[in-house]
Image (cartoon, rainbow, N blue to C red; front, side, top):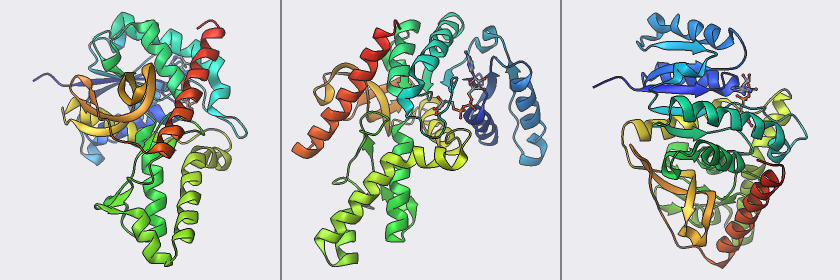
Amino acid sequence: MARKRIALIGGGQIGGVLAQLIAQKELADVVLFDIVEDMPQGKTLDIAEASRIDGFDIKLKGTNEYKDIEGSDLVIITAGLPRKPGMSRDDLLTTNAKIMKSVAEGVKEFAPDSIVIIISNPLDAMVTLFQKVSGIPHSRVMGQAGVLDSSRFSTFISWELDISVKDVNAMVLGGHGDTMVPLVRYANVNGVPVMELLERKYGDAAKAKEVMEAMVKHTKMAGGEVVKLLKTGSAFYSPAASAIAMAKAILNDENRVLPTCAFLQGEFGVDGYYVGVPAVLGSEGVVRILELSLNEEEKSSLDNSINAVKNLVEDMERLGF
Ligand code: APR
């Protein structure tokens, strides 16, 4: 079987960590593309020179030319500016849309048969634009946001309950912005509802609700919290780790259920938009959307989030993209 190849478009903070993680896990050969001259070549050389120590054996290539991504099975896109303190993800729209358009043209020309995961923000709009410009089928174009937002939510729950994060299952749906929807009712520790555990801890339903609300708010603001601390950019270890989980599910045909920014065609009552939902990921990309029942409150939060995504996409179209 031929070795798999992953092309990383954008060799900045997230792109660099992605290259290192792919190498350490021997997930695939790596082509790291960036417009900055010599930088991707420098990063891949540096990672390759750690191979003897870390004990991995894959091919790494840094490049400034799209033709080098030819034959890639998977493309992960991080090209674009990250947030600075005080900025929302949506503030990046115009700059990153220009970049995404050029990236989509490059991928369309040299890796049209690949499966594509987008990380660049504002995520939901960037995925929509990439698909439109590249023409790659919707099932092979998706965005990473939900795996990270869900991991953040799970982390806060594990800290609160003083329980291993490995046993926490929690999911965040909707757009990758302030309107995202952490699913409280479905959050559990090995099947036991988190709300039940909070009520036991505090012996008071009102206090348990208050603690959960604080964790939900923390989850929604978590990206901004990192931006505020880093000052010069946004989170990069956790977004990279999240995309690796998706990449692994796709390359190994795992059919994992991962919250993914996927194209909806009637699911969750949405038609024709990319929104964060539980998706089954396998060798074909998004194999199917896993629908689940939502109560009135959850449904209205998701509708609110979907409206925010629609507004963002309309803003982008008004800007001529
Ligand atoms: N084509 C390819 N790469 C580009 C282009 C382009 N047209 N324009 C810029 N880049 C590259 C930059 O040169 C830089 O190396 O994209 C890289 C982005 O890296 P960082 O600035 O370090 O940003 P990073 O933290 O990796 O985040 C990238 O992911 O989470 C989102 O909001 C974040 O949109 C941002 C993206």
